[in-house]
Image 1: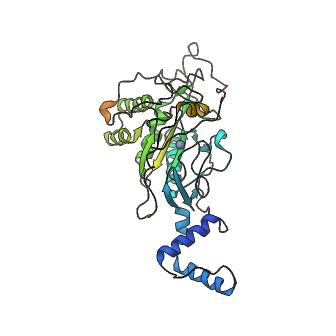
Image 2: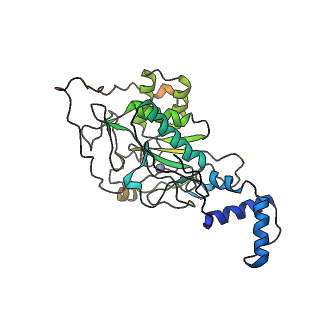
Image 3: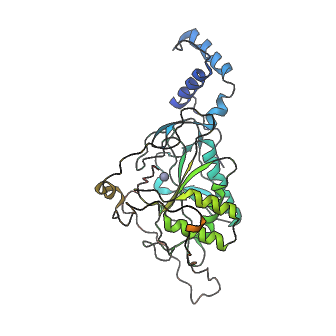
Length: 339
Ligand SMILES: [Zn+2]
């Protein structure tokens, strides 16, 4: 369930938003008094002048760009029986976002749970309360970005949970976690739910090109509607010049209409040097796609991907033991999206 009343009246975000709304409405011509009876009268006028203040706070206001911005107000993503915060991303309460983003994640998690009972969605960072810099990220500053973990299964179809994101290869296997498989069906359900969300407008869904191809191939085999496949093909992309996102989805929604000050895309930057990436990412630039071109868009660019072995529940002699130990996290992951 999504927390819909995240308002903190004493917070800077509240003060800043009320000031912004007041100035935007042109209700006052001079500076606001800071204390005394005059200030109380001023506060009363603010309340009357902004009857949608609380709703606006809950919805949130995105200022600036994903890589240089802030979030005023917004909604707080809370854990439920079908949604957890990735343990490695629990610290710091980086779970704030524009209301459409937060509720979209909740809707997508419920959608997967509805189709696959018992499934739990793992979510990483959104934005901080108030937005701004988040350690390990270039973006996530303005309440429009979120990281969502891949669904992972064992050979027997059981959901596997790690305390951090785990990378997968094009063959759907995790090189650091023998016996763990990329769950095509659940991951596609998540993707299709987000790209077709009725309230949030997804503009980017960053994921490594081989996994993008894998998901589109699965969707075609599964008979998913062409509209959903086209939309997913358009939105899923591997970002240029940064980590390829082979261990989680990064979803970004667009600026809400009529929100002046929200900047849709980050400004162009110079790509970091390889040593800088290595210092955080612990994998070689080549393997992390430092110079990987953007994937072609459209359904035609999805190569045929062989399906992973189906769960073999009735063949105990052939089943693999359930992997119990997720791979160790060697260093903090970096989410380098700025595209
Ligand atoms: Zn991210």
